[in-house]
Image (cartoon, rainbow over all chains, first blue to last red; front, top):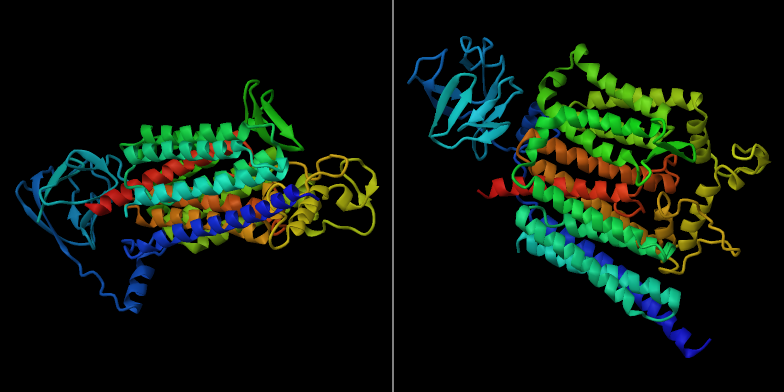
Length: 164
Length: 434
């Protein structure tokens, strides 16, 4: 065993330790930078149903988001008078079926349960409930979208303007 | 510090890790430090920096941890493949193609990846076709009794890897549309569930492959749970799967054999050997591969033998563990890096999965949530099935370890998965900023 072989062995050991140290440093770095943005809590649970989430919120003393009122003005509709102001207590379902927050029974292009208006921490949201003809905000088809004042929400042939 | 800066720092660290690992391997082999290790490390870093620039342009708000994590996983894969087969630089080529695929997906879908939802049924059909392709005559190929390969003459690939992604896209679109009806739990809505269960069973029968059936059915159950929040569905689905698998266990020799190997790899007395038809100790025949892999892991001990110093060949030069670079790469890593290194590798996978689930939580619409959750769960389950199989926690089935195992289809499919996760997180983070 000559000097060179000995040096190689020591270099290999050093490299091995260096590799493992680097690897764990990398993991610590990634996890640390990941926990830094954990404070921004997600808006809603991905797994809990609405009831369980509400129960959990109550258990932790988090004030249930009080039902907010979303105001709309009818721009055009076969079911509602143009210019009529709507005040929806969220969560409200819009659709052709009876018992909905907004009855659109005369709008043939609206689905039974078409869309839901809901209040979240960051404002009023509209979510499509798998409607046949889609829900549109300012002309674009959406699956869920936050409403800004002045946005035009189209459900079937009904167009509503979201008011602040 | 922005996500992109964090990504850059992470990638430089990943480059250092790859460089160190490659230097160790070449030093152990040649007893001298050749500059080629440095060149390879530099090329590795350059490749990922190019990907970083594309992410900066196309998905500026995307999660900053995913790309470095994938880089470290491919560094493991490149090092081990280079160490086990120095002549073949193919894995580097696959990683190059994979990163190109990542960039292509990012560029094509940079405006709105949610257009994929419109093509959900196309993806559903594609998933089924891809899963059944290996059973097709002429192009289908059987390797060791498992039908997973398609041979088109010029290229050979494993369509199962791509089917996984198509299935997730289909389920994300389908469940987003139907989640409310399905959650109500009327009997008629269980039709699709039963149909997919039937398809999973068919895949087992057709391909003899328990692993991919378990993987795809697991993805389906997880996404069903995410969409409806009903644990009962998962329990029912699991019961169905276990029931079906138990029946197949008694009906199909190959499945039966896998379970026997798992439960009792060693025998004291000669038993029937399915390969030669003679009476042999099971560790010398059917469970030879698994037992040799367990010895390999045991030889690593706590600190490992060191990269490039593990024993993978018998004194006469014969390979001790068949399929070492694909299915059994984890046992090679466990021998050379020991418990410390093998645990670090599992940690890297876990952090990747944690990031993916966080992306699903932060996504704003149902399709994105389901897409991110499904892709991440599939990634996690695949890792568990193969690492668990190699460690004899679950019956062994041959699937690849994401980003690490040798193989073109697997590498490219996982880079596509990574690109989709980056796009989902980009949109979620961009929305929460405004």
